[in-house]
Every structure is written in C-alpha cells, then in structure tokens.
Picture 1 (cartoon, rainbow, N blue to C red):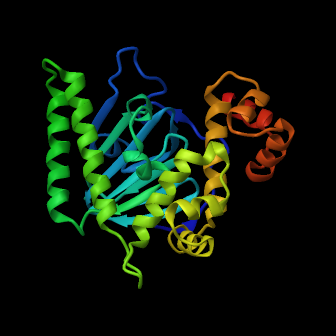
Picture 2: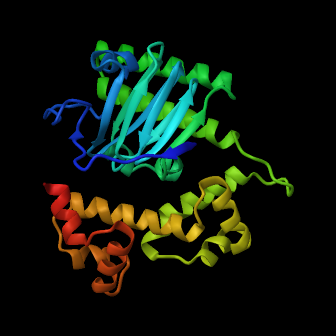
Length: 295
C-alpha cells in the first residue's frame, strides 16, 4: 500500500521498455527480464515513465524497492508483486540486493480476455507473495520458463510466451483472492472489493450509481462505501468515477475521435457536461489533455 504522496515530473517520458522509445515492428507481446538486467545499468534507479499500451508486473522476490506509482510512494520488501496499468506513471529505486523479474504484456493480449485479470490492473496492487509460498514457487517456476523461452525461441514460441504469461497472471489472481480479509459476517472484505472492481470494469460506461453496484453484490450502499474506504481510501463513487476518467484519458490519448464522440461512447448524453466533469476531476479540459498527451 502507498505510504506517502510525492510529486510527478511535469514531462513524463513514454517508453516501450524503459529507455527504448519505440517497439520494433516484430516486437513480441510478452517480455520478461531480470530486475537487475536494466536496473544495474542505471545504478538501480528507474526514473518515472509510462509504458504506452503495456501492462507490467514487477515480481520482487528479494530485496527492497521504493516505487513511485502515479505520485504515491510505495515502500515494499520482497517477496511481493506490483501491478501497473499502462496509463500510470511509475519509477523505481531498488536496493542493490534486489532480485526478481519484470513481466511486460501488450494490452492486445489482455483486452480480449475475460474479467479474470481485470482485478489486477483496475488500480495498482502490492500482492504479498510471502503469504502463499507454494504459489510463489509456482509463479517463480513459470517466470523462469518465460526467461528460458525468450532466450531460445522454438516452434510455437509466441503461443508459449502467451500461455506462460497468462499462467503467471492466473496464479497472481489466486494469491490475491486468497489473501482476503475476513469480516465478522464471515464474508471476505477483499473478495467483495475485488468483485466490486470487476463490476466497475463491466459497468463504468453505463455510469451505474453506488446503489446499483451494491444490489449486484447483495450488500448495502453504506457497507460498500465503508469497504472501499477501508481497502482503497476512496468512496465507491470515486472509484467508479476514476475508472471512467481513466478510460476517457486512454481514448483522448490513443483514439483519433472527437471529444463529443468519446463522450457519447463513455455513456454521456451531454458532451458539454463530460467536458466540465473531466476538467473538474483532471484539472484540464479534454482538448487540453489531448494536446498535452501528444506534445
């Protein structure tokens, strides 16, 4: 969990992999490397950046990391997995004894997936791998196989990378699901919160109210809000609004459509209201955001 807030640089560079401005025409959809492979070259410091269209999971198996994720400081000790959405600025300061892997996956491989992996990336997570040593061992074995497959391509190479990467994410989903916090009713708070985020991922374009989400989860709106405040520090309404704005930012950055068209696609009946809400929440108008993202 984040321990403090910090400032982000005014101009955040966008990379494919860190230090590489573009991806080659034949770039694979899955990339894996040891933490030290890139970090050692930069004295264990990875400056704040964004990966366009790439999901990333940092598997820190030993050592420490200070991660700046979207302006929040995370201080973590291995074994832990940090999940990062393509839109989130992030940077790392590793201890010199840090060991582990960085798994990078093209969004095209996950966008067509079911909701299974959505809970990993709706917001950044620090998933404790120490609480599940058996699953940690299986994840590490899969990552080792990914490194081996990447270094020695053979028949069915791309498909094998895809399968192994999805297997790693599935194991991480299991760890996340089993690290639930049990409340007095016997139901898992973490499980409920994960289900809420899945529903947000399904319904945010319909702009559901908190009461609608609560009905699907069969809990009261009050309990849903308390749950979100407890585990995320935000109300259920704010979490849904942030997901909507995240999609708006993606479309303004990557989709060459007019602001009004994007507003309608996101469920707004009035593009002017969309622009006012966007400016209220993001600090700039949609047009200004688009210009900044393309600068």
